[in-house]
Image (spheres, rainbow, N blue to C red):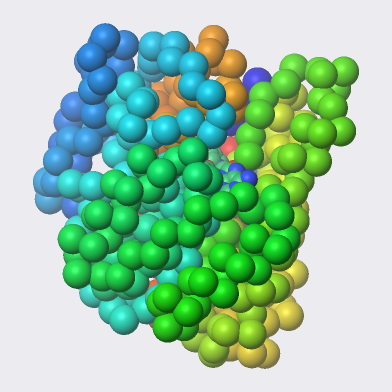
Length: 349
Ligand code: NAD
Ligand code: MG
């Protein structure tokens, strides 16, 4: 009952997003330096290993380039730190190579301290963008690493700690990003809350509210605050999930919010196309990120995380970064209201 649980492919899977996702990856591939073979041997080791195999340009069998289950149990308090994961996720720190595809752009990425948002933030900086990242104050150690990496690219890095469940903070975060960056071209609504609970009996109103405030209300508040600053050519991206299409029993609230994220992109794209602003969603499958050991999965499920995908492993955040780059860049100027996926072989329409 987790992000890895998928059903048989539907007609929509064959007709829709998987094809689009594959096309996106193919289009983005030249900018991405694929990693080398370092596989399951790291999973389960006692020392903190890294999933980062280092940059290589040769094609590699994707099944073996990153760790596979079994993983060791590693409970963390919410919201979790990437720096304490074993193996450490690959966010592209040494493996993502840019080629100027976002030169001079100004981007805000929520949840940019770790996981998928961090991979997008690093890739954006390597592609030439100045990047502001939102995150929770408890995540300062992870955030510092990302801010350093952005600065090492010679780009401006802006730190925006705070809780996006608060509408006033959302407005302030956007205002600060716009002021510090000197404008805004790319908005990535990526911060998210996932907490696995087996039964409705345990799902309190407080928990339900927490998930919806983070995953549904905050993107609304943040986007509303950002809109007056976005010009024709701007790109809004929201991180949805395969859970929008293949919901797990134990992610009843979370899966509903991810379906909301899909509709966010499809509806807003229609509203904003006349203004020259594109809106798209990314639907990841199972990715090895801090959200999972900090309550997103049971520790029992974490041991086998990603093992039931056709690839036999979870994705690493860097493996989805090229989709964010593509959607942010001018190259995808006719792509709006779309959902692009990367989920290891199943789960998206
Ligand atoms: P992550 O924990 O590394 O990133 C999530 C980030 O959300 C955190 O780093 C935190 O900064 C931010 N966040 C959460 N609550 C917040 C709050 N109240 N205020 C401010 N920031 C807050 O995990 P991730 O997996 O990279 O998650 C990124 C996005 O990807 C989420 O929207 C998640 O739903 C989505 N997603 C993840 C997976 C997966 O398997 N990891 C699969 C599908 C979708
Ligand atoms: Mg984090």
